[in-house]
Image (tube, rainbow, N blue to C red; front, side, top):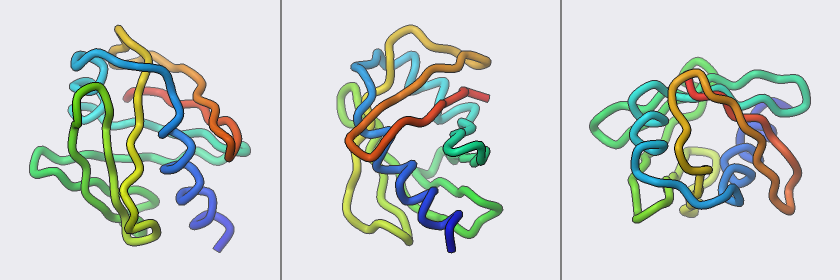
Length: 109
């Protein structure tokens, strides 16, 4: 249950990052990301049909790009959360995001 709460927090957490250009979001949905929260690595995979999975399929949801944000809904948080990523990131880049819920590290696979 703790990991489920961490993933739910992660989806909300990433929503507070800095603005992004489409290139960063393209890299995120093309390659996926690894979120690191409290020492836990959470692999998130996006598919071209607007779906994503995390935690070996235990977390599923939908994604869409709205301007400079990646917006998601999931089976653990049906309300839409929108994420703005830092500009000019590519596969292999890592960065930190902070929100009122805390801090997470994001690495684009």
